[in-house]
Image 1 (tube, rainbow, N blue to C red):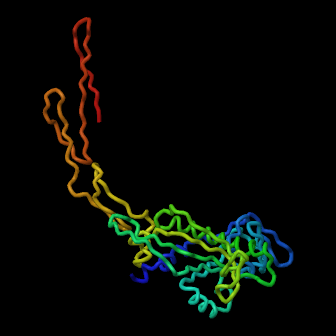
Image 2 (image 1 turned 30 degrees about the vertical axis):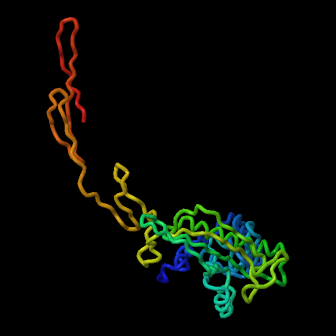
Image 3 (image 1 turned 135 degrees about the horizontal axis):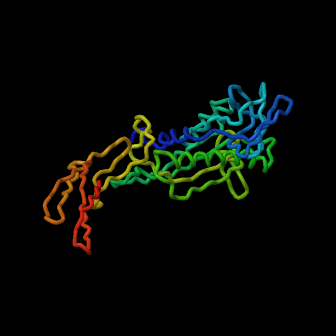
Length: 315
């Protein structure tokens, strides 16, 4: 199997499609160089990260989950919609990713992180008519930094778990509308990690990485479609997923994948126009053709026994 068919590679375009936009309802000048946005969905906003609002750069100084985001900057923002920073995507084993993270000093290069734990099982579909290539059982983590010195238990939920649940939800949304996947019909499992690590009933007993993180784990089976464009490197296709072509008798004529078309072979036969009185064939109409007739209707005068004819043209 080539790298392009690996699960981590198939997830890349889906993660890139995660909606990063934040829509706020109002903004207030606090009079001290900070500005507070009223926002009922703060997504994964986190203190210390930079955002571009309009044409200017700002730094997030505070947030209340799903209530407000406070930023510092040179002037009062003039727009109420802006994008958050993109999450970092990592994949591999715990040891491999931990080694990579150790080399990254700045926190914005490490988190928020989407981590695909690559101990993966795939259920392969062998039916050639099946549009699904495989169902992949994934464990995906959504993680941010944890302030072990200052955070309370409530802080770990409001500032760690909840923002990462929002990131997880946005990933599922992107997955559910992706052209690379079949509809998600199964049930996923989400587990909170106020402190990410090996846990018992008494809490986290050992950090998994060499730093303290907080977030959620998503267990999900992803049905990837065959011949997806993310695996071939070809131009992206926004049309629906593969479909079948049947004839009027219900027989399968073709299976069409992305960018494929089907052309019929023998054209439909012509339709005979027959004189109802004589049985003679007046004309044969082929597909796309038409035929005009005049219906003659007799009206019988019951008094004088005279008849007259009305011409009723029918197209």
